[in-house]
Length: 187
Length: 187
Image 1 (cartoon, rainbow over the protein chains, first blue to last red):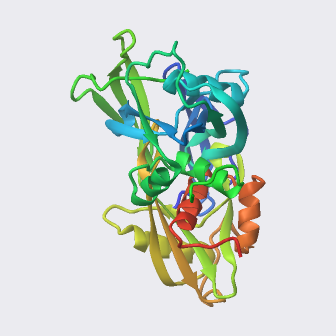
Image 2 (image 1 turned 90 degrees about the horizontal axis):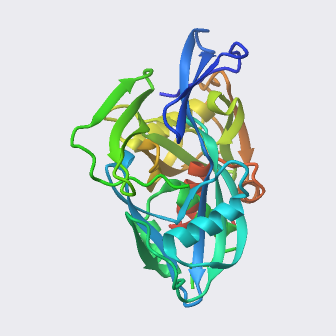
């Protein structure tokens, strides 16, 4: 089963319903090329995701464990958050890394950006790699509901392989960082 | 900005609205740990995605270019589609590979499965690597609206690096296949 729609939609046939401060439901009328029937197609409009693969001076990667309503359970993910309007993704990355883990980025560089889901999500995800000191800031206070988990690069690689780290978009950012030579998890 | 919700939601506070044969809108009531306010949280329930990284006997990777309503434009992606109820993901993979590209899998093996988006999507994506013959089936007819694009492994790697291939979930599957030693794009 594949949803296959043509670009023959009537111009302007796009309706946006605000569901919450975080997400809007977009409904477009699209025409199936197979039988030329017009049908509604639904997607979410939402802020871009920004996530950070940070390595501390003593070789640890800070990850976050938190409850995710859509999963009805806890997940293990890269630190990150939502890009605010007009904010540079790199600024989002540094801010969220600090808020969620207490580690200040001493250097940070872009991994790239990717579409999240061409089928249903209209945002992008931006990835960054960062270097931090060995210790968290003394002023930092943990956010309610966010638990830190530390892994070495080799442990993260193993967690991706065996499925303990299974957030697809974050696996994509890590893979892109490895491919671009910005992160080495083989040593 | 981070959406942070606690697991203290009232049990059963989950409403599902069927939007189309393809997707349902799920609304849960969740409680913010910061101020204990109850707010709606929205996600999509939909069938699992299944995608295939195939390499032909003469070293070409078939990709698909198609119109995506949510992107209001064309995208370059791995072949694939939606898992039907009760269907083995591997069967979906072989079927969609053939329907979209005309190449029959001579061997196929799982790369793994990942969560698509822990924030907003309740499905998973399943990846497979396949080997095919050098030529497409003589009986095959192209699907309307799907154009094939062929790349060598090195070309695909370069397209990921420079952003021409930017579907995050498919980059994740390729990265997982590389990490697990199921695909080599460095040669």
